[in-house]
Length: 278
Ligand SMILES: C[S@@+](CC[C@H](N)C(=O)[O-])C[C@H]1O[C@@H](n2cnc3c(N)ncnc32)[C@H](O)[C@@H]1O
Image 1 (cartoon, rainbow, N blue to C red):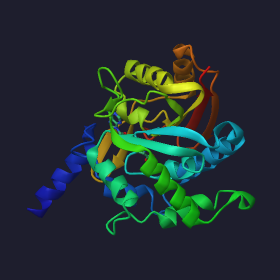
Image 2 (cartoon, rainbow, N blue to C red; image 1 turned 90 degrees about the vertical axis):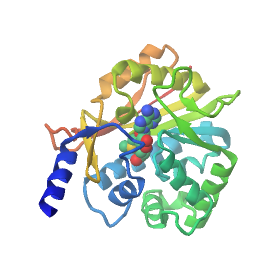
Image 3 (tube, helix red, strand yellow; image 1 turned 45 degrees about the horizontal axis):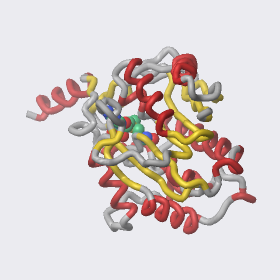
Image 4 (cartoon, rainbow, N blue to C red; image 1 turned 90 degrees about the horizontal axis):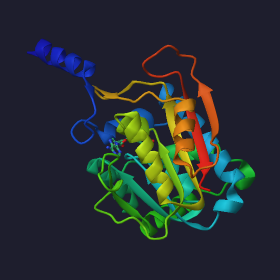
């Protein structure tokens, strides 16, 4: 009996899934990647993303500060990017494909006792902000909660026929920024869907708005719990070409970091690409 179970689990682990509604466990995901004592590779990955996003936001602060609206696409159950974005924008619109992910965000927004405890991870983020620029955690959290209250929480789908938004109207006066992390390579099953999604992001931006995409590079798979999720392999050139093909974005700026693990189906590094809508 026990042997049978473990064989089943082993079998599942080798199955590559792309079913985020039935197989993505947000609590396991948060415990795997967003608990600070965890010293495995994803923490290093998050380290790169956080440091670069802090730098980019600070570099463009005159353009961004006090702007109205940012969209985080494919946020999962995660408030890492939102904490930083909330310091610049009045409204955060967070969306994800899996309703359970949105439920976990809602619990934190509502200050529920059952909510994931983000404080240790938020402190880990704040430690990366230069001291002269840093406020205290209470102020950061208050800004985040207010930006979430001002914004929206809703479902999205890269495979939507007419829109990326599910059960939510696109805003009439568009977004000042679109941010997405580790979503496109997980959500898009083909390069055509990736291109269409980047085109749609561009259409959702105001002129001068910024599109910033955090990705893993050349990865084909990642694991959460007992499941392996399929990933569309992407690299700097694929993203650069997709940005250029929109015909509406400036030449992207790319920052990347090798993880020294090549060749591997877990990828050979991480990257951030960003550009402005012309
Ligand atoms: C690896 S997680 C990334 C989550 C989060 N952004 C982070 O930083 O950890 C991939 C996310 O893509 C979302 N996703 C999967 N299929 C999608 C689809 N068809 N459209 C939009 N998002 C999708 C999943 O629900 C999941 O939250």
